[in-house]
Length: 381
Image (tube, rainbow, N blue to C red; front, side, top):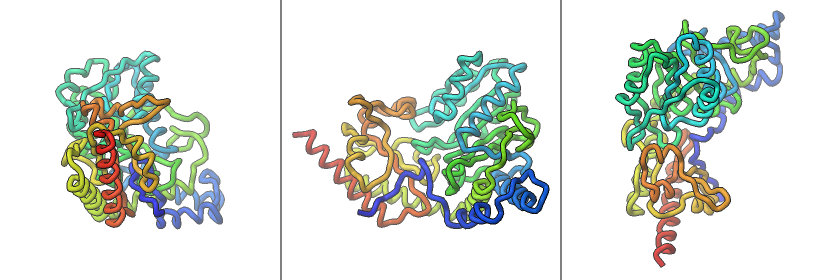
């Protein structure tokens, strides 16, 4: 049985070009970038070359890039760092109601430590309510964090407008761009953000590496204490091989953005159109146009998608619900979007990638539509 991988929003395989770029730094070029001899110099040059490649993808200066262990650390660094370093200005934090746990849990931690937290609602397509955001801002608001694209439904947020509003009030803006990097153009100057997080394993680089963009002049509390690595903000010997991998992945993402986005969109739309033809009453979750090109969240009423997917071992995808000790819980994102529970329970999230083929999509349509129709017949008996 050939497995069909349609969970690229969860993680991606390492690109062959990325793997080849990393190999020398596992073998002969193993030096510590802080060492002054030949081995250290080679490692240092590799790190800085990778930093420039990440900066090129985001259209910023390389000195504004700090390497981290991944998206979660980047989010922690950005939000905690900004909140603590700017506490003299205020202590109020604002986030959207559909953020990833790598943002919400950080903010909840800060909330119990003296930082009031406000959540901004989204509409039924998952887009943040800008008027509600403006009304929520107070003289003590210090940071606003709104994800660039949602990991479950793919909706892209109006970050440029969020940043413009924040700038008028002197508020720092962070965006989690883990899902949009490599799937949408990201220009930090166009967006106007102060802080932006990316994760390597979402863009065909290894797990355990990421980056944080920090606009020059943005004050952050130091994340790791020790030696003066990463602009004296994150101590610890650099993970050279994976940094090189992230740099190469960013170079490929920029180089092939149009081609890759076009392919992922075609595969996503082929899947959606096929499911609509083969099954009745299919609901699209998320914005029909303003979303990253690889993400398809669809709901079928009155079925348990989590149970069905568990039975379909041929397909790797995600659902909008989860079963724990016999109790089914619905995704907080779908709840915030006011997706009716009968559709939320029956929601599948498919995310296509560079390697997705038409044959895989057609087979998925056959498997999913067949399973849904059989389940409907079973429930009607």
